[in-house]
Length: 570
Image (tube, rainbow, N blue to C red):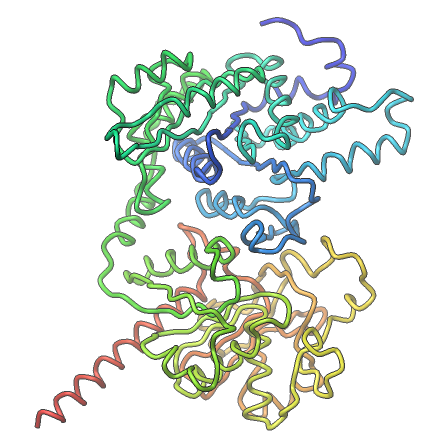
C-alpha cells in the first residue's frame, strides 16, 4: 500500500494510526434510487457479524444541511429518533438499536450541517492558521475524523458507516470523497465498501435489467470509490448468468454480487444475507479469522413467532402523520416485538385524528381491541385525539397514550370527569384558564428550536401496587424523552381524588411521567417515549402488556358476541 500524503498526517488527529490498528471500517452507499434500504442492509450485516462474536457499531452520515433532524417535519424525514444521551437523530439509528440491542449516541449520526458548523467554528477560532478553508481538505478531513471517532478507543472490531442519499446527489459528494480518501489511506484489509443498488424487473420484457446498476457503479467509480460488494435489490431471483454479467461490467468479484430479494419483513433480511454468505465475504475481505458459526437462535425464534401468530388483535393508531408510515416507525416496530412476545399478530389500523368527531367516533373505532394515541406537536388534530381517548375510557378499551397522547388523556379527564370544560394545554391555547398541561419551567426562556427540548434518558420512580409496577416489576426505571410541555401538578390532587393517579414521577423535578386511570382495566399514559427502547431481544414491557390486554379485550368481545348470538337463536 502507498503512503498517505503529508497533509493527511498534518491535518488528522495524532491517534489516527491507532484507529487503523484497532478497528476496521465498512462503508455502505446507495445508488439508482432512494429508499432501497441501506439502513436495513447495514443493520443486517452488523447483526451477522455481531452474532459471530465481533463487536460492531453503525453510524449514519446524512447529507442534509440541518444540524440534526429535530426541527424537521415528520412528513419530510419520518420520525426523529432520540438516543440515550439526548441526540435527535435519523430514524435509521432506531433500526441499528433494534437489530443489535445496543445503545447509540450523538456520535452515531452526523449531518452536513454539523460538519460545516464545526469547521466554521474552528475557522472563527483561528485553528486553520490563516489558510483558505475549502471542501477539500477541511470539510472532508472533518468527515473522516467523525468517521473514525467511534473506533478511537478500540471498543469495536468493526465500524459500519452508512452514507445517506444516493450516489450522484450533489449533497453527498463530500461524503463520497471522504470515503474515497479512506479507501486510499487505509490498508486494504481495514476498509470495505458495500454498494446497494437496484435491478428492476420490466414486466413488458419479462426480464431483469442490470443497466441501472452498471450506471450507478460507473458513477461511484467516477468519484474514485470502488465497491467491493454489490447488494442488488430485486423482486425476482438473480440467475448465475445475470450475477456474472453484473460482476463483469461492474468490476466486482462474482462472489461479491449479492441478491437482496424483497422480504415480507425487515427482520428476515439478516437471514437472507446469511444465505448469501455476506458475512463470510466481508470477513474474507477484511482478513478476519473467525470460524464461529452465527448464533441467531433467538432471532429465528422471534421471526418464527412473527410469521406464525396464534391470534390477532386490531390496534387503532391515532395520529396526524399517518400518511407516512416512517413518522411512527418505532411505534410500529414495537408492536411487532410485543406481538411476537404474545404470539399474536398486531394489525395496526391507522386513523387520522383530524377525522374523528363525536358524531363518528363509534363507527370509526368500533372493532378495535386497543387504542394508542401517538405523540406529536401542534394543535392540528388534538380534538380528535381527545374524543378517541373518551371513547376508550368509557368503553373500557385498552388505552395507551405516549407523550402528547398522555397529555390528551389528562385534558379529556379534566373536561369530562372533573367538569373543567375549559381544560387545555398552553401549547394549543396559551391563554387558557385551566392549563392542565403547561410548558416546563426550564423551557419558558428557550427561544432556539433545535436541540432545546427535554431530551434523552431520565429516571422515574414507580409507585408500588400500580399497573406500571406490574408492567416493569421495579420501582426504578429510566426512559427517553422529547417534549417541552408537562402535566401541571397544580391539578394533581383533583385528578388523583377522581382515580387518575400519577404512578410514575421524576425523583428530582416532580414531573409526572406515568398516569393511570384506576377504574379501568388498562388505561395508561406516559410522558416519555417507550417505543425508542424496544428491541427484538428486549420488547418494551408496556407494549407487551398493552397487547396482552388487547388480546383479553378481544377474547371477551368474542365471548359476548357468541352469547348474544346463542341468545338470539334460543
